[in-house]
Image 1 (cartoon, one colour):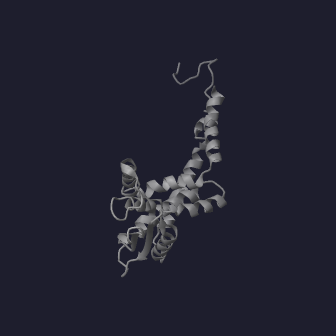
Image 2: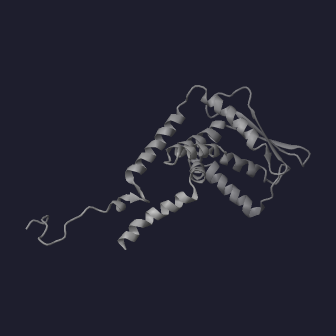
Image 3: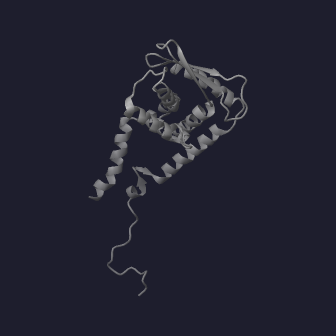
Length: 226
């Protein structure tokens, strides 16, 4: 008898239930389509369109002066362009002045590149948000929150919590160590432009009801088989 022949009376081989072909309640085609959309949107955003670099650098400074002008009770932050405009996409083009108004105007400065600090993580967060299958009204709202500058806020918090005349926050040894760890993981890592946006995407795109539906759909196959 051939080893591949099914014996009479033996149960027929049936395809796996449809639920077992899903990952957390989503079929594989939907997941593949999501990742393809992320790649497409990110590729479009990374094309060096004329004027995008200069336009984003200006927007980066305007938003910085609007959102971070007052940092804590005594911290003040001022964003300004570096003149003359440096060449090269990775050159520092923005000067950030930090001030503590309670210590006789003590000031410090740090220069940064708006593309590395803002555009790269923003572009990846935008690609994730645009590819997420939620209503467009929620995607647009999430995009507004996605431009919040998590990495920038973390750097400012680190600068204003050092033990010097600029200190506005006293975080203690544990708090400062936590900030340093977050800085190394989310701001100083070679892949920091891709780590922080994932957290931003999760926080600003999904709602509590989405997670409840996701968890419910992922447990359905187990209940059906029990």
